Each structure stands twice: as C-alpha cells, then as structure tokens.
Amino acid sequence: MVKFFGKSVYKGIAIGPVMVLRKEEQQVKRNKVEDPAGEIARVGQAVEKAKQQLQKLYDKAVVEVGEASAAIFEVHQMMLEDDDYQEAISNLIKTEQVSAEYAVAVTGDNFSEMFAGMDNDYMKARAADVKDISNRLIQCLSGDGENDFNFSEPSIIVADDLSPSETVQMDKEKILAFVTVHGSANSHTSILARMMNIPALIGVPLELDKIKSGTRAVVDGIKGEVIFDPSEAVCEETEQKLEQEKEKMRLLQELKGKENVTLSGKKVNVYANIGGVGDVGYVLENDAGGIGLFRSEFLYLGRDNFPTEEEQLQAYRQVLQTMGEKKVIIRTLDIGADKQVDYFNLGKEDNPALGYRAIRICLKQPDIFKTQLRALFRATVHGNLSIMYPMITSTEEVKKIYEIVEEVKKELEAEQIPFKNPEQGIMIETPAAVMIGDELAQMVDFFSIGTNDLTQYTLAIDRQNEKLDDFYNPHHKAILRMIQMVVDSAHKYGKWAGICGELGADLELTEEFVKMGLDELSVSPSMILPLRKCIRELS
Ligand code: PEP
Ligand code: MG
Image (cartoon, rainbow, N blue to C red; front, side, top):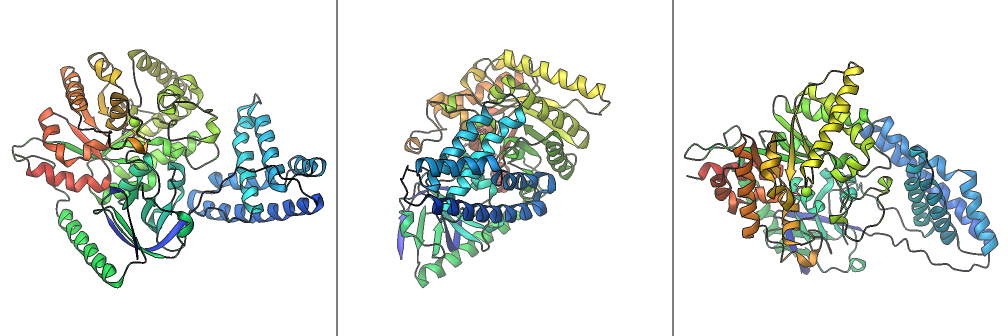
C-alpha cells in the first residue's frame, strides 16, 4: 500500500484499476546506422502498423461522430502512403545513414513547413496532419503503443499532465478519476473534471515509471490522497464512503424541480457550464435552468481541421432542441492560451495567456469567426439561443463584432436562410472590461463574469502555473469589488449580470453574490443542486 497526496479539484471518491498514460518524448536524436536497408524496411513495417491504428480510429469515429468527421483518419492513411513522403524518408536514410526515427522526424518537419507556407488554406491545414502522421510513425517505430484514450474498463487515469484536447478524446463513462503529477486547479482540464463529476487530484508527486497499469487504487478527493495497492480495510472503508456519497446525492435529487429562491424570495437563475453536446445529459440530470456557458471551442479541439458550418450547426441545434425553451448561451470560440489547436497555426508565444486568443483571433481572422456566426445564427430558429463573446477589453471590439455580425446576417438574408435576432452578451473577464462596464452595458444585452480569467489578469497570476495555485485567490477583495462594479454597471442600464467562472460555484460566497444582486450563476452541472440547496437556505 503506497499513499500520495495532491491537490483535489473535485471532491469525489473512486476505487478501481489504474491506467497510466505516458506521453511519448518525440525528441528524436540523430543516430548513425550501419544498415540503411534495414531501417527502410522498419519504416515499411511502421507504416503498416500506423495504418491499422488509423483504420481502427476511423471505424470507431464513423459510429460515434459520423462519416464526414471520421474522414480525417482516411486522409491520414492516404498521407502515410504518399510516394513523395515515403521517398523523402528513404532518401534521407540512404544518403545520411540516419535512423528511421530521425528520418521520419526531419521529413515530417520539412513537409509540414512546406504545407504551412502555402497560400491555399486547405493545404495550410495539412501541416498539422503531416506532423501528426509523422509522430504516429515515430511511436510505431520506437515500439511504443499509441496513447489509447479509449480503454475498455472504467479506470483511474494516471498521467504526468493532461491537456484539454486529450481529455475530450476520452470516453467519460470509463473514467473513474484523474490523478496527475502536474496541472493547476484552474486549468481547463480541472474544469472538465469538475463538469464530469470526476474525482481529480493534481500535483501528486508520482514517478509514473514505477506505476503499472492495472494496479488497484483508491482516490479520495475529500482528503486529497491516492492509495495504490490499498489494503482490504481501506477498500472496505472506501466502499462505505461511496455509499455515503450516493446517499448525499440522493438527498440532493429531492431538490429537482424546485426553484432557486432564497427564504426571503430572491430568485437567482442557476445555469450549467458545458463543453459539448455530450454534456447536455449532465445538465438535464442535474435540472439546470439553462446553459450559461457552452464553451464552443471544445468543438475545435481533438481534431485536425476546422469544424464546418454544418458540423457546428448540428451541434448547436442538438443542444438547443434538447434544452427546449430554456436559455442556451453559446460562447464563441476561445482558442489560444491553454487550448491550443495545431491547425490554427497560432505559433509559439512567450505569454500565451496574454496573447493571441479568443475574440482576438476572431477579429483578425474573420473567416473563422464568420463560419461560427453563420452556424450560430442559423441555429437561432431551433431554440432559445444567446451568443456571448469572450475576452472583451474595449468598446471598439464590440463594434467590430457587430459589423461582422451584420455582414453575416446580410449573407443569410440574401441566401433566404431563416434566423432570429439572439440576445448578445459579453464575458467580463479582463479588468479593462470591468472598468468600462458602464459603456459596455449600453452596447450589449448581458454580462457574464469569467472569474477564472478575471482573477488571472487582476492578480497577475497565470492560471496554468501550478506553482502559483497558493497565490490564486479569487476571494481577493479586488475581485469581489470588481464583481459588484460589473453588477452595478449592468443594472444601471437594465441589463442582467451573471458569473460563469468557477467562483460562481463557491458556496462560501453564495450569500454575498445574492446580496450583490447577481442575476445568474452558471456552474458545473455537478454543482447545480448543491448551489440550489444553498440558495434555498439563505434568508
Ligand atoms: C473564465 O475565464 O472564468 C471563464 C468562464 O472562461 P474560461 O474558463 O473558459 O476561460
Ligand atoms: Mg475565460
């Protein structure tokens, strides 16, 4: 029995087998080889293995997301078979007598640069694909299995760190808990864990090489500990705790259908935050009054090309139709910072959180923005949709957004495609937006405060930096005063204001939020009923 402590980001309990996800180091060294012909033969075998893996992925994707989205795996198979690509690898091995791994890495980089430099957007996007297939080939060559994010048995995922795009690829039904060596409490992976009700520990000082997949473990998110090879007594105790948790949940279920109203009659809308269509089930299960934040960028993660207008429309329509008359606030894409996507070719930045992200990308690359806006406006006829724009810092940005929105509406009208005029609001997540809240309030229909970023930018603390977790204090007076300022600015002009950052679910602050006059709190689905209980007990 070995015990480790970490920081808990979702206080749940889990017991089960461990699945260790190791990230393969793709730093390939230049090694001289004696037998170039043998190396070329190894490339041939690796290509076959990679093709088989891609075929499996294709078959799975066809069933889960349909043929159009699965097609990328076919494209990858074709790229692997490309004569120019294979010839470049063989030539490098022959002429420079280097290992197959090195030749694949260099060829991958060269081809990817060549694609990235092309004028045509479609070809540009292939840069990420060629990198992807080259990494897959290197993994096959070095004998490492691929990181299989779809395990057969429900497991406790143990990893060095997890990116949001890795997390979204996993089958949520099969994850009992996350345990990671790195990661920060306010990262999107932690947010995902909370959203999915998955016990999660970060900052656990593990040596992954010493842990075998299949080992039994217990994760206690309340104590912040993970125990590998637990004794029978610990297992029994854990089973009992699981029962108690279930009982707590059962009591919360009794609050379903009840109003979010304080004892003195003040009503607060309690909505849910989601990342994709698949999360709507959690929203219904927990009886949310609506969706206060649909992080649409998750539609762009875990894939190799931009989601088309049709694909986006399908996702938005599904969420809207499932929610019926209830409000669904879809936030336009917030890519960048920790949500990196190769095919956006954003390039490396010294300060990504202060960099090219969210609305900045949309305003600089309006084609990407317009595709999303077209899908969103087309979706307006399928339910009660509001659109929300992230990372606003100025009134000029809002004006530019509206100009693009007008262009999109004109296009749709010309094409006789029906749409309705949705409510349009902004996220208040920069100190600049707080300070000019009175001006912004006159331009938009609502404010939703993104306390995760607002805290990061106000306290000058990178929310991804685990070393700063102790300094990241969203209860800081500066943040609370800012929230009050935002509510006051909104109300002065008859607009509503809510919180969709993680702080909205902080039950220690619920009373203060109600007193401040917040109209809405949008939280992880798992927090809807605990928040309802708290509101109903306030006098
Ligand atoms: C926030 O910043 O508080 C927010 C809700 O947006 P995200 O966490 O996706 O950046
Ligand atoms: Mg944010």
